[in-house]
Length: 281
Image (cartoon, rainbow, N blue to C red):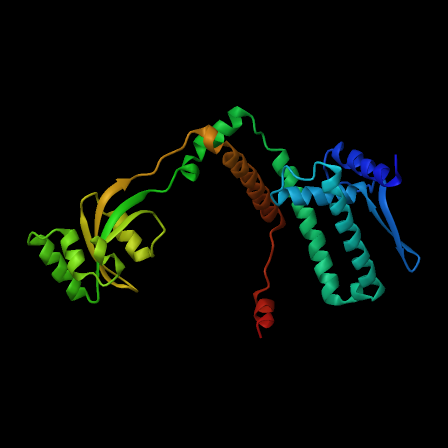
């Protein structure tokens, strides 16, 4: 077996057969280098952490072979060599860099804590079902409305359009005759849209109206609107199996939110508003 082949097999054995967890121990050294006599090395833990971060970024099935791990090892080694060069130039003594390094350390600790809190969540079928039922609105699809609108420049124009409808003209006919936007050709057809997807004033009027009702006028930046609610979808709760992964993620977020609240309650932080004001000067 060639030396290169042996190194490749060592990487694969060290990384792929060990659970990917953060550790204070470096583990076996996979690559060595030196700058000004100072050693620069890459350990199994370095590569395992890199793989963990890459998988979290959406490459769950990747990095499962020696060929895919060698570029990871090279990337880690390159980063360490560049960091060593930065230290050789005393960049690590720059106050801003020091602050950033502390912040990065905090972020790494929080990331690790988040992972541990999430891993400790009970994800049994019973626990998932209980959370799903208790937070059903969180997983329910948003209410929707199928809508036509008439949009005109002034409130008086909108009232005149309403009078035309009250006099027997269909909403679609009036929209085709008076609309000032591109929906004029389709009789004001806006199709289906979910609650919260339109500007608030328009959205509020639409979702307060019953099916078949003409509502308005309401003003937006486009002009004055009348709306016709043609159909209603109240939203639905999908079967648990279809959203199980989302439920588990919500459970983990909830556990982290509870921990955060407990820590804030315990620490009783005091904010110096005067200092904040000085910061803005």
